[in-house]
Image 1 (tube, rainbow, N blue to C red):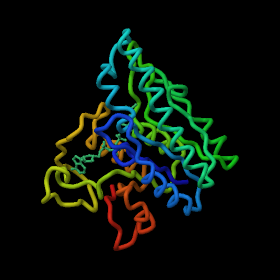
Image 2 (cartoon, rainbow, N blue to C red):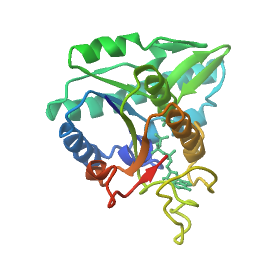
Image 3 (cartoon, helix red, strand yellow):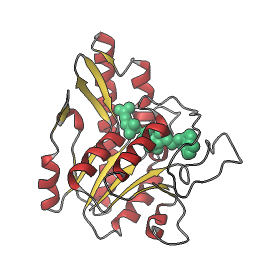
Length: 242
Ligand code: ATP
Ligand code: IP8
């Protein structure tokens, strides 16, 4: 099994509300179609999640404002998921949406149903979502879901697609001299340009490290060049290995 995270930065224009990069998703999906293995797909929010979450104070204590925000963000994420699911379907990948707002609350998590769908050859697709966490309306990031499923199902690899070639020693978008880190073990700089309610690249790195500590190889690849997934383990691989 392989777990794929489609990052919000590559499947959407992160600065423009609900701007979907359909052509990019199509290219990634066509690449994934060539992988002859069980797959769990998780996608992030990008401009379908983070903009309204921030505007409505999510995560935050349940209030009229955060409950309205929850409704908007959850529906927008379902909308993004439908767009992705339709592209999967039209490329012959038959999937089922498994939103974590129905699987995770407080500290309870139940991912058992993922296994059942996989047993029938159906690809589970989950995504960053709103959820209930004590008295708060939380945001459960796609990266958290990737960690949860990796811990439960022990895939042979976890691949994060983002809009950069990998993790650099500093943000490549704002530092033209940034150096790509082919293997990462420790510190790097991360000045985020776009506010991200789930912690941006630093939180992503922490999750990647947690997965790698389970003994599972973890990669970050540029989703604009998804074919790089086939070079994993080779000398000419472009990306970051955690
Ligand atoms: P989402 O969380 O919406 O799913 P994502 O998974 O694609 O999005 P981001 O959280 O947006 O990922 O992180 C990728 C972004 O992190 C890049 O677009 C880049 O601008 C930014 N960034 C900041 N510092 C670095 C760094 N040192 N190396 C690589 N990217 C960095
Ligand atoms: O983009 C959070 O998931 P992420 C998505 O993977 C929302 O961090 C709903 C903001």
